[in-house]
Length: 224
Ligand code: DC
Image 1 (cartoon, rainbow, N blue to C red):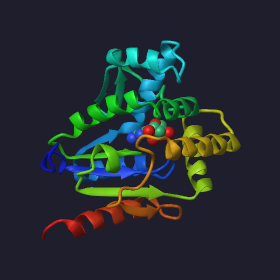
Image 2: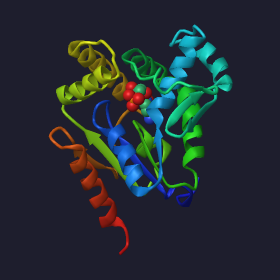
Image 3: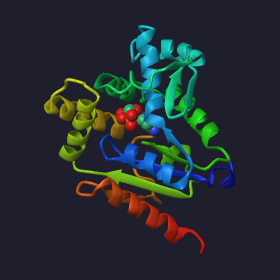
């Protein structure tokens, strides 16, 4: 891995509901470059396990399943073994399942490899939990978004409501607390800010304000 191969990568990491997906998507559009949603990849692997009735802690079975998993992005949609699963993976159940399989080393190395292939010699905005720390430590720009627990749960609850999912705010909050704990305490590549990341608390910021701030930072560091 050389610094040059991944110089075009911008990483945005943070917990669920920090605003990273919305911001990463909009930043990519603004810069006219590709967007990579790595959480969707973990959700797709979790979906493959559920479809094959594999228990989420059965590492032996999951190891056997991985070579049969094909994940692709096309026109803003994610395909699992050639099926569009973009909507199917957007449930609280799949979020929790993704967080469970994300503790497994073989799942992480399988997806890290795929993510590096996508980012190699390309300009992309990638978002997740470990993009600036483990997957693209050489990325030129790294951001870490945070927000208050209740604010994040409120954003996610509104998002799930808009997708027609009937789930209470209390359930979303409880699932989020459990998931945050698992994501930050797992042994391999836990959710954390890279040492050279810029951390931004988005609790009381609008999407436009966050976007403006990120673009300001990018422009400030680019040679004029
Ligand atoms: O960002 P998301 O809610 O779609 O992510 C779902 C889960 O996937 C998250 O709780 C932990 C896992 N994940 C991860 O471990 N590493 C990433 N880079 C992205 C997601």
